[in-house]
Image (tube, rainbow, N blue to C red):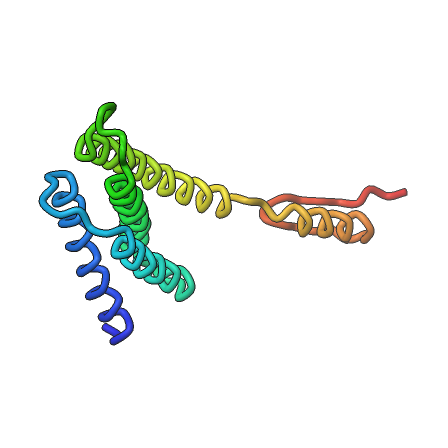
Length: 162
């Protein structure tokens, strides 16, 4: 394995562990990370995703995981921001609104990750099935202009005598 890929997998593993611990600790209210920490982790995961895309790596599981964790860090960023700025304790407590936002945004992240996977597979399927219409039209024009008999892909074309 190339040293570049090795570093990417190590960083990805660290981001996965920190992301899961961040979600659990925020939901349990053991430790709510600061928005700046979440922002730095978000930028690291976006950097890994951009590197994965620009290097045209073939691992689709790595791409799906990185997309999910970009959304996860966005979820953590918004939840920790809500925790820090929430002032209306009579309506909802800080802990309650943070848990609600964390749960809803995590469900949205899971849904958007599945949507990304479906869009990507659908696009690749349609892209692979596109026909080359221009080439076939130009071949038929050449065939109709000549007076020879042509056999193309099992089809017989014969120009009628004029």
